[in-house]
Image 1 (cartoon, rainbow, N blue to C red):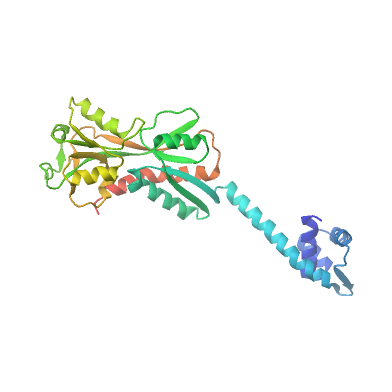
Image 2 (spheres, rainbow, N blue to C red; image 1 turned 90 degrees about the vertical axis):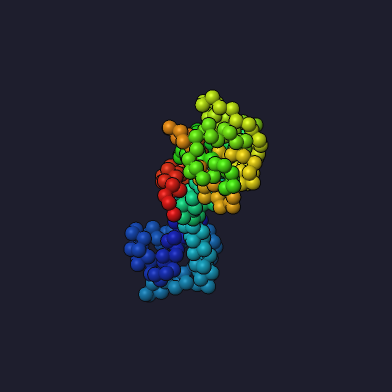
Length: 304
């Protein structure tokens, strides 16, 4: 039994006429007759009764017609899913995320991707930089979002956006009313750094930024994430430098200051994925990320 025999049988059963079935299938009549005869021989059952006006289904034929339609439906469904998967329109994507970027960029990119590709399941996992590299190598994840990634053999690192840095200070502190502050002014306050990590990262960038101006502020705290850093700044523990997207966090007692430095200090947001990964789902996700990252950055800067 093969799919051609089944499709020929369905056409004949629906038309109740071999000639009309052949015309519908765009073939001559003898192949249709021959395929149906072979099918009957294999099933050891008569599927049609020949009549002067055409054919009629036997009871066995009626039962087989229902099953044949199910078979063809499943095959068509499978073929459609395979085609959608080949175009990256169906499947699964495991994405690793991290602290501060979850506020502004990543949710918007993921939601836009889900809007465009609703049949792809996106699983989000919280992982730090080292965990993301390990997860990519073990194929536990397909892509990670992170900042300040060092080159890694076998991995692609692609910057999709660049954010300015801002300073979070207490609304009750001496800097709250400035609007803008120089690094020298910020260095007079204790510094809150994040995230505590095993790898080079945002902490080192902030330290290097002050060092470039020959400033060495007192480090009051090194905490695990941006949210804790902002909370400590709100409580008056010191100044916390953060990516601009963190301004969307509504936290009582925090004021954000522009950093008066030319050029303005920035930090990247990058995607990291396996080199040579030909996944169509990954390809489509990267296209959304590339088109969405910088646009969303501009949206964040527009006044509400």
